[in-house]
Amino acid sequence: MTDTNYVLETRGLNIFYGNFLAVTDVYLKIPRHKITAIIGPSGCGKSTLLRSFNRMNELYQGVQTHGEVLFDGQNLYEKSVDPVEVRYRIGMVFQRANPFPKSIYENVAWAARIHGYKGNMDELVESSLRQAVLWDEVKDKLKQSGLSLSGGQQQRLCIARAIAVKPEVILMDEPASALDPIATLKIEELMQELKQNYTIVIVTHNMQQAARVSDFTAMMMLTGETRSGTVIEYDETNKIFTRPSDKRTEDYVTGRFG
Amino acid sequence: MRKAFETELQQVKDDVLVLGSMVEQAVLDSVEALKKRNIEASRKILEMDKQINIKRFEIENQLMILIATQQPMAHDLRLLASSLEIISELERMGDYAKGIGNINIRMGDQPLLKPLIDIPRMAKIGVDMLHRALTAFVNEDVEMARGIPIEDDEIDALYNQIYRELMTFVIADPKTIERANWLLWTAHNLERLADRVTNICERTVFIVTGEMSEISSSDDEFWKPK
Image 1: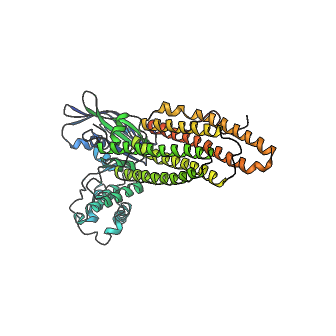
Image 2: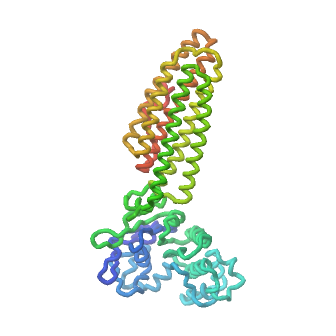
Image 3: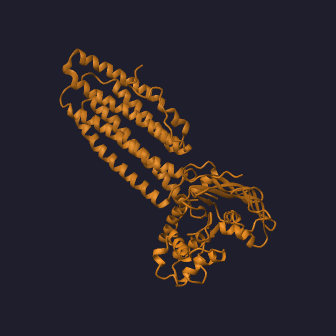
């Protein structure tokens, strides 16, 4: 059994794009109700690793995953596991907000309804929007299209949509990279609220953002003859950004990489 | 990469070194002025202290700008944060020199209780420790930094010696209390200076290794019973 303090754990994770080994030998434990950031230079496999946490890589052609991803002790890659069920319990928010071309209300209600939610939908929509700190801004226009919102609001709508199905983990792939500083700050503050109830794993290019929001940080890099991505250092965020152990992490966080 | 930032970091070190040499000069001059009872020279020390304070604020401002604009991490962050600490230590050392200058001015035309021998030695050793501590800082030389605090023992021994000697004067003639006290304060300022050198050495170790710990000399407190 996985230690209950860790919600996700990878063991000997290797991910191929066709013959190309993109991510190699990742052993990582994601602590429950904490924010874990994955940082590293472009093309080092951060997003690929993140997508392996809810089997999202299977939606990309030619991706093969070897090794284990344990979710509360259960290997997500066992044949008996339904990937759709996995993605309900481990939600995802993407770089560019992707609300459905439907009303704000429907954006939140839709997945819950498909998932067979039988409770009071108005309450679910309101509580999800409140948790995403969007309610006050949209409560008077729930019937308007989700696409009518600003970029930052759309991203929070996507977070509300992810929350509505009551996931345990929320994966965020560069959730604020297309947003202005104020909207970014709102997302970051929202993450601090959300971690009371959810585990968050965020991929970010923005080191200051990783330093600001996360509790733990995994540093990834291309290594070895195969030039495939792996986690070279994983520690408390405070340590990674003030006194990292690995020289390569030091070079990366101080901007001297390469 | 980050050439401009590297240049700025080097500039910070250079500026700390400049501030350090101003302080070294002020300390040596303050003791020399007292030794020769040169009031005019002591007034110059007060002026030097003002310059030291100005330089410290200049460096502090530059450090703030670098932290705000470059968002330093890891080694760079430790260097800039430690530099803030080090310039504040140097500024306080400048105050000790000023304090010695003020003692000389306040003594007016009263003669020294005794010729100064050990006090100038304390100043020389302390300033020498400071000089090497700043060299270790600039070169990020951990071994050198770790080796300096032990020399504080010598300063403490001198302080004890001065204390005992002054007490014999006071016991023999209580009217000498004030003049003994002036010299004791001078020695005390120099004793504190050496303690602050240790703080600078600790920062240098922190910059390089990330370890924040005290380097103790064999006898940390000069009044500790033997």
